[in-house]
Image (cartoon, rainbow, N blue to C red):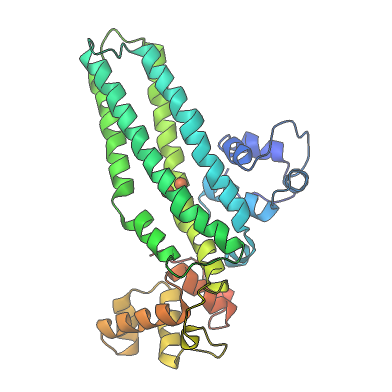
Length: 324
Ligand SMILES: [Fe+2]
Ligand SMILES: [Fe+2]
């Protein structure tokens, strides 16, 4: 552990090194039984992009964000498949399996108040997860599907989704529900419960929690920036749009705006950018709003990629991708 996985590594060794990669592999649609083949060989045989697969492995297992060169080579399609399969796995397989274990371990009929309550909390929690994932599938994944086929409706943008996903209390509410559920089980489980079965259900719930956390993190720090880059390459399909709304081929940014972007890219706060340029913080904010409007790029990660592609900064000047 602690090293980066590469395309010439044997996939079997990767899995032995970190068993969580079994899930990653299966969500990319790769089945077991690949002998001594390397990651690259197995990926090629399964029609999976090797770089994208490795980026997810290194992120899930080692917490490593892709480098900039890697970022630019990630396949949106592969990531989308991975996320969709994760949703299916959570809702159709993992959560129902945990529920079955609870029902087997504890009497959940109305006569047993605690058992009944545990199951009710559990079902509430699952309903919340389901709502979140359905929203994602309908509003976000479909939009990304459209982008991949050159469709970009004028009335939607990634920003809508990103705000919902990152800043809404959704994740917090889901996490609170789960923590209530775990607490009730830990503190108040009836003594009549089948211990082994109940422990295992709880253990699975903890594992599920970790799995969900890294899923959300992958969406926020890998998927959204990659989609944001794709979005900036697709023109809005709006027949009614005025010609002056169209992005011009000429460099639309002023020198000051480029300086602001450099600050953002270096991970500086608005205040730090303001201080280094001897301007007020609210002026920085105005510039940032103008930049977002002109470029139609709304995230720092998107700006970083824009800055690299347009030669405002060099790849090796940056180490980390700012995410907020
Ligand atoms: Fe998701
Ligand atoms: Fe999500």
